[in-house]
View 1: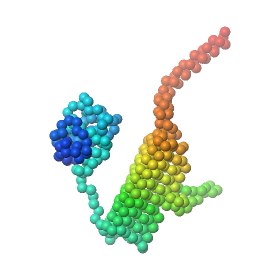
View 2 (view 1 turned 90 degrees about the vertical axis):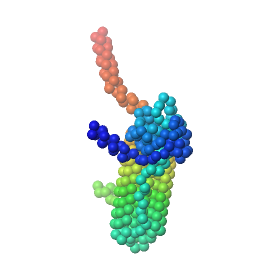
View 3 (view 1 turned 60 degrees about the vertical axis):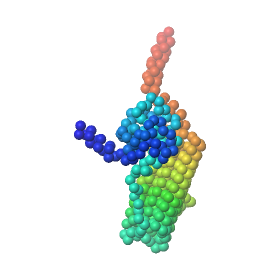
View 4 (view 1 turned 90 degrees about the horizontal axis):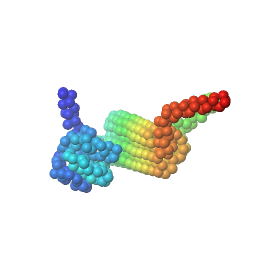
Length: 365
């Protein structure tokens, strides 16, 4: 009983307070109400954790069964979801439930951490460093010679900005990020802790059994509105540039090798590895732990499923999975066939036995 009460208290504390009628929320989200527009919503929460008085959302039809099980008083849904036979709940119908819920959370979320303009006396600025207006340079950050930091950009504690590197406006570089020499970063870029941008590409030539390092003299270009997760590594080009185009979002623990080019608005999920000189198009999705061979092309709007191993070019809009990565439908057929292998082997063994018996009878005749 004590554990149950403790759990309820924790859930209550974790709820985000709101206090608005469903009608007020609907007007804010420009949605359509199904149910009681006067119900008072006191908090926002996930669909599993929600309690009476909370509003939640459904963004994936796969979890539709959770709506009737949820204790939430209201649910944000899209027009495809059927509310038939669901009682005791009200709904707001919107175009994009996930985005609408995010807007709602912003109203009640804790005040975002702000960084006051200023350069800490405990930071180090090398010769020729230039900074724009209202920058924030935290203690123990190091800005090497001739680097440039744009207006309102934040450089977190312990971060390193290499020589001749340029960082644009309104960027947020979290603590302990390393950005090497001659890297160029656009505006509104976010880089999370532990990321390394501009490390040497993995280039060696083996001569008489000895691995000789090939100089990596290129650079990295990160365009506007890119977000780079924690402990991501992006290698500089051997020659030319490794480039991440605008709007791309990179999850934690991703490796991007030298001379890779990634198109606009691509999503790269955690633990993905991309080998050198690969070109990835616009609006591509690379799911978790996927691996991409070097010197291939993945065209616009392609989807690489989780843990897929891509060793060939991927066509525009193609969905691939498995290793080696094949059409997702083909991979599913292969997987289904593999589940039948024990039964098929048993039948094969029986057939071999019958054939042997028939051959024996034929020989005796």
